Length: 290
Image 1 (tube, rainbow, N blue to C red):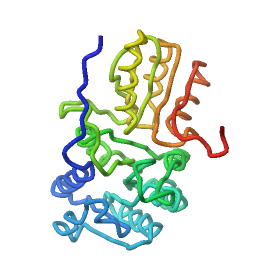
Image 2 (cartoon, one colour):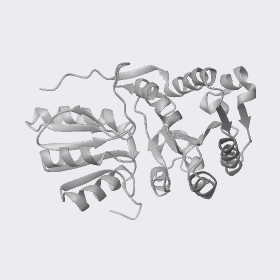
Image 3 (cartoon, rainbow, N blue to C red):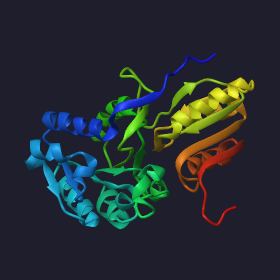
Image 4 (cartoon, rainbow, N blue to C red):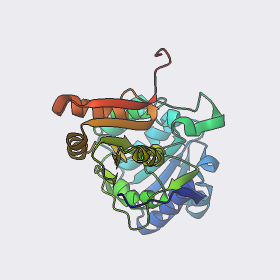
């Protein structure tokens, strides 16, 4: 039997933890700067700008310029964190990220907020279902989706001091609390949330809580699911995926993203090339699919 994980919404928005960490590390390391595209209120970084005006650049509603400015700062030895909503952090700036950041091998951290359905009332223009797919195709890019505040706190220094560009897919609002302050986090290494032998459920972001709930329901029917939290979509923890798939013989992926070229696509590629396994991808399907 698994250890029970009590899940409830956190008291604070995840963006508040993000800004806390920006302030903490800006005090420790003079290289940290933020570059915003007129969404400081949305990101919660207004207080960072008031505390560290010399470390804050707001380029206005000019996302491509934001990435170019961040690349210039990185080339001068700074560690810039950019922010805008996910479609504008990925689709709108794809060429700048590819050439000015990744091709140049620069140390830019790109935060995209309100991924997938969490954009809610901002509507289709702000609801990106393909941001992971866009960034996953860029050579040298690391993609991280912290699940809650505790995991974000553990992830932040590894993200900041990782040598190379990182895309951070971050829920702005209250996350479901899953991890505690002593949780283990290793960039590129997944976490076994519970063990099982009948099926593997691989989840990221907000779908981690859903996967654990699904496992509870399956257990009532005598089906014991192994649940993996894959917080780093790229590079994928292929060793853990293959080990769990070999153990259970069936895999389900769950993501707040298109099933095309996201977490499900990455897992399918690994299994297809190394260990063909019965698999189902749960996520947003192309609109033309039935």
